[in-house]
Image (cartoon, rainbow, N blue to C red; front, side, top):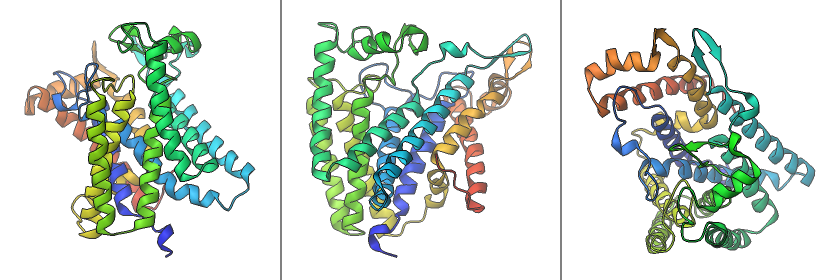
Length: 374
């Protein structure tokens, strides 16, 4: 196999780990306060859970470093069609999934929210838009230009938050520019509510810096393809990651890290951690041939978006009423998981069990060599 076309198991494992954590975070068991390490920062700050989504965007960029090479031999119209088709597919699936998860039972009748008032932006919709913008940038610009444009996007977003937010409260939940733009363009009916306040953590404006997470993943993938399985690859990934983390921690004094606003300092910080994590995995898996956990996480990594969508579709069973006034997720936690481990740990056990059910579907697909691309 040509070295430039070689696939690295590390990238599947990294992507798989992010999907594993995404599902666990999204499906905590009821009956107790969620396991604290798996909770998002209330506003400013960055927890383990806050690393998951940007890490998946970073992984999307990793995959682009291979797929974009194939586009080099295709006519421009065909490339744009492929990018547009994938963007539309992921966005529409995300939009329908957002509507689907509003389903609930009312006196035994299945009820959905008004489709006309469905939330417009969510996780998959952000992935779609970030992929589209990043793919077009990579296709039309050189690697050096992509780096420069990424820096410009982060600095411009910082300026927009400061200039277009409400003076003095630019980085608060009510005064930020992201919320103001979404209210003007999307409208309150199509937005998420954060602590009772209309605010969407996957807003339109904050998609700009989120795109840089994808571009960073792409650049890391290109670097790995060029340098291959060497100690230089590991060392430079780790050094770049440490430098970005140091820059972000310094920047944090002026622009707080905030996932919900997806601040530029947050992008730099999460990218730094992703580079260090990727370098560590690369060293362990590609150089030292470490096998522990590789097959497990690769199952998630080979069908990532499909398994994520599947996990959301499974929610229909979790909200079914099996006894009057109680849905399945609460019942199974009360009679089983909270009996085994009362409190937050029982909530964690449910989340892990649910994730393993999703993994089993992925394992069957992998055994049959079925890989569903979205």
